[in-house]
Length: 191
Image 1: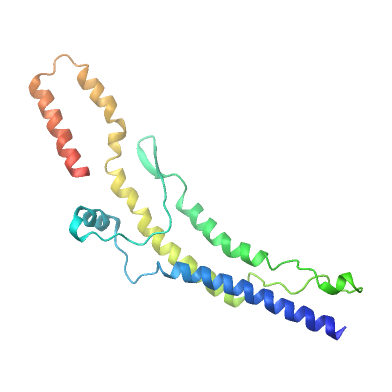
Image 2: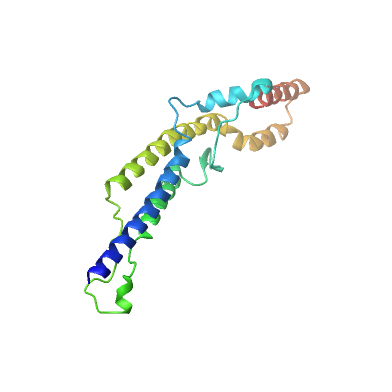
């Protein structure tokens, strides 16, 4: 029985080592995105206009936008994205669960499984907190992107306004020129 216990302990240690190594690699990936200060969404827009000194932020995720009635929203909520990213940690830990002890095929044992790595493990919790902190910091900046887009959300109904304008017979050439100038100015502002 001592042999089987030693074998189970060795296997448990190996599985723990693999799981922790995977989690540390995952954390290492996220730590690339931890910064003392983050560039605001507004600053990114300004930087993109300076083509000679353009600096693109390091990103790993693209979040699509969609229009909902009269506003712009993320296609997938930032909370859902955060939960999906943190779920990877839980999935890695779940892989350590329910590994059968090898002696169960050879001899009867009261213990069916080797020791699993619990989600409450202090090292696992530290890694979880580190990753969650980086995600939260970045999500805060990403959320501010909506402010930029939503200041122009009125454009979502602009085609209806243009159609109404065109259908008004009382509009003169001067009215049309003013509308064209307005849209040219808006175009320059947006681009």
